[in-house]
Length: 223
Image 1 (cartoon, rainbow, N blue to C red):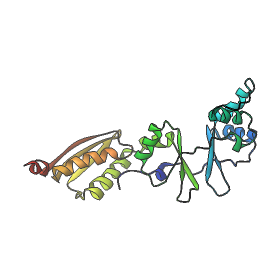
Image 2: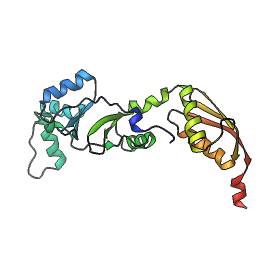
Image 3: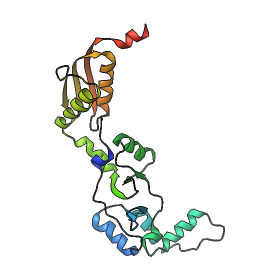
Image 4: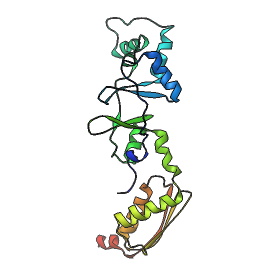
């Protein structure tokens, strides 16, 4: 299969807090570990909420704005007041947790981060238990892959595994993350797929496809 999955790049050693942890200890956990958010995990290992720095800042705001919401106040106003009065992790957490499975492809997970304007996705197994976290910085690490690693991935995942090309049919060189494909494949459709699939390999910056073909099956199909 071409490309990496969430499991390949996620952070497995996740810092967590319990729902009964006191507010001050939650703040200390964020500060000590240099993180901007922490999941709240129930005894069975399932994430039940997340606490961000923004959630904790509601307590600071409460020092100047401590008005209890009225009977007809909006739900978000009531949630904000609850956070202001929080004494435990369960009180201050945001209950919506965006999760992803470890087998999900990295491009798909990256799209979710971007379209949802999220900083992180929490990774859960089939039972819903927390097994990791995928942050934006984890995704960006793919661009630190060495040129040799990228070349090996293109040769194996694209040319050998996906297109069944013989080793002597095509050569792959990579410089600065830019992939150059040279050689001759059987069909024009294979040439086009080689370029497309190589571009999907995580860490590839661009693809220069100089492959040629022995038979133009695309043109023949139009006749």
